[in-house]
Length: 344
Image 1 (cartoon, helix red, strand yellow):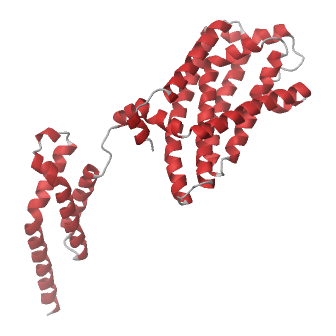
Image 2 (tube, rainbow, N blue to C red):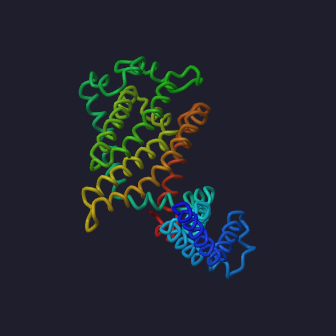
Image 3 (cartoon, rainbow, N blue to C red):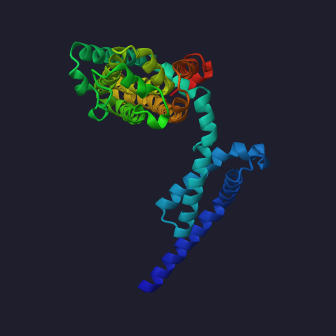
């Protein structure tokens, strides 16, 4: 008797599943056909009716899946519907552009619009960076012993207070393989990359750690500027640094501004909830940081090739000045109103 009841229940469930499938299968098959064509990039082969019907069919099949789950229909039907709904979701709601098209929009105005959107934070970060360089200069000028506390010890060879003009000049000019500053240059890139990442990542602490990192990093530069200035080599050192420095320091400025933007949004959210303000600032700052990575790569290429090949101050300033003008023009003169509206 129990076995007969069990068989009857199984037959009833199978009949219910078959009826359920027959009543709705036409919509399922039509949606599957549309999704398959779009996945293969054959959108032109679809009729206008099919394209317009896509969202309606998606909701219909999603409803069928919900019913199938509640009524415990057979596993095969459930698996089919789950797979179809998942595929259709990516067509209806998923990303509509490729990585290439996103990158074109990013370079075509999205990045520059995000940078312009955090202009106040950039001004604050710039002021802090200048102050850091001034502090480093004044500390060492007042007491040269500060130099060893501000500048990393691995570079305390010929580039120390008391070094002759000839010794310092030799580090700026000559064959690349003979330039002691090549090690210092590699350190600057590595250090500045770390500072950029940390300045952004620590922005959640109301931006204070980001500003402190900027001060510490620029104090090192200020001390080096004082050292070369004390021997009348300030212009030559600035030219040596400008080749990659205008790009690298600009990247640090953007990273510091991005981190500060997050911290300032959390400290002063306005009428918005703190989490919402932080999320909006985070999306905008993340786009800025994506560009910072690109700038650091460009700076590394300039450092590895242009700075090594150009051995005169005027040529170095030409390259560094061109890069500075390029970045300023790109960020603050390039971009459309649409890119401003689309900025995250």
